[in-house]
Image (tube, rainbow, N blue to C red; front, side, top):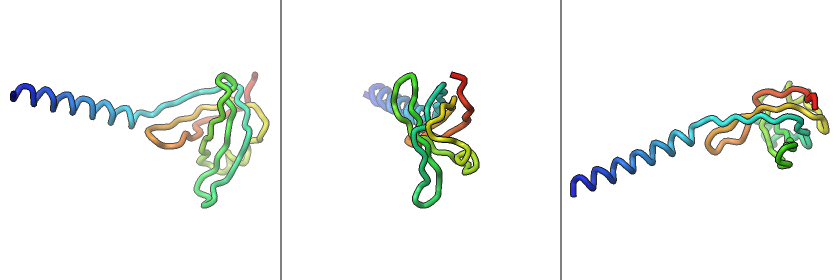
Amino acid sequence: MKLLIRVVVLIFIFIAAINYLDYNRIIEKETEGSIVTEKKIAVDDEYHSIWIKDEDTGSKIQLQVKEKEIWDLIMTGEKYDVVYRWYGNEKPYLKSISYSKK
């Protein structure tokens, strides 16, 4: 009986550790030839957002832009190569952006 309890506790700790590590893992994605479809400023001016349309999947993705100067330089309707990151339940944020050669 004690062995069974120990095994159950170890399994529980193992599953909790995997979930914790997966939640805190930073995920990075790179897209090429993505079109910026929309730009917006948050109501409280906390962050600036852009929406890109991924050419590969066709999905629209909202990205936070932390620097206002970079947000000002991004033009809607233009194609960019974009690298963005996110972790856990956080919204994806822009890591780097450059004009696309596609």
